[in-house]
Image 1: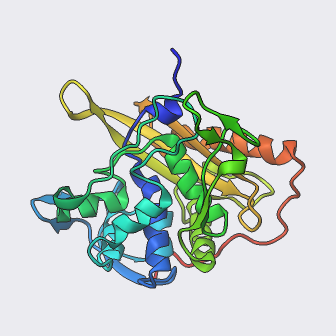
Image 2: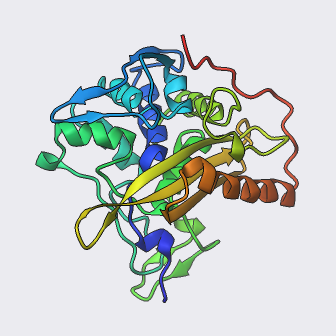
Length: 299
């Protein structure tokens, strides 16, 4: 009864993870939004092939297109350029694999494999959001770093300072800030995220907010049943985004567990749009006057 699901429930983040992976690709100088990739119908890796969420032939996608269309295969191809351990170091800097320590008890630190557990197969899966687990506060704080010019701010529930029963001080006066990716990498990622909401080239126009530029990303992840330790056929549907893209005021993350009716776009996207629309208007944020990103998604 007395818990926050946003802190205690762990799950595979699914394609929302691609935002962190591809921002790291940009920051490390291993690609650009216009980088060109040949994406095959199936990618054979180790003993398990990797598929995309849609059936396709050979696709010619840019890095922006890989994010806009949420290609698992393309994300793995882009992540192939990381040096050993490099992706994990970025994800750790984003705050995955450890508690946020916002205050309430019972928070999980999630699961970010390390050492021998980080195999080549795990490396591929983590790039697009499998084989790791997070809580919702971890993930929204990570994506918020991209909205905040590449600087991660510890999440907080208290304005000012408060003290826990064990004497630990918490609150906005205690938060730490650290740069995770460069300002340029964060901005380029935001422009790629805008393409996710494009009505022609993206997968989540349903999450758009009329009058505002919005950067966002869908997530659809298979859920693991405790009884069998296997995928049970249900999903975690999610959508994360921030806006306005060119001057972010809010980052919002919607997570729907045990979804059997659709993916992140159809299930979480509309809720995100309503929450973001209300927030922007409630706080009098001016409508966007600049055009959204027109980065090419194909070549």
